[in-house]
Image (cartoon, rainbow, N blue to C red):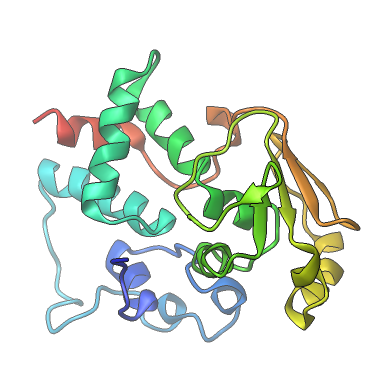
Length: 208
């Protein structure tokens, strides 16, 4: 399975803002963008005039990197969003939010989307009592996500359970922190999306 394996802090620096790709580290003084708030590379500190196309491209790259999807996969999401009724940009963001790895992250069961992806791949969850080890699976209203009984006994999930008291999932998700069981009670709305993405720029890019 293809995935980005380079230094993720470099991605934040390239986009010029925190993408919170390393979980708790992003909230400490070790955060790379706090220490070096300029783009990586030899010419990272030089002034650059960004074109309209460049602005649109950066927005798409930002969305890809936040949700951890590759180029072809992102194009597939966009094509699916175009076919749905409603506003294409909003449809795209809602599809990305419904990914299983993102839902695990939103529930507070992982410190970052990358960690959530790894936990899903390692088969720690079930979706509606069925095996769920594909991070890109899309959840729907009424779906039940549960940590497997065997996994609940691991030190990792015992720590996660203790930390859940300090985390609040978005309104479209509910979680039982004792049983480590969650439910999708609604689809996310535009107002509930807290990612710094201007989705209309992505639509403009693909419409060129």
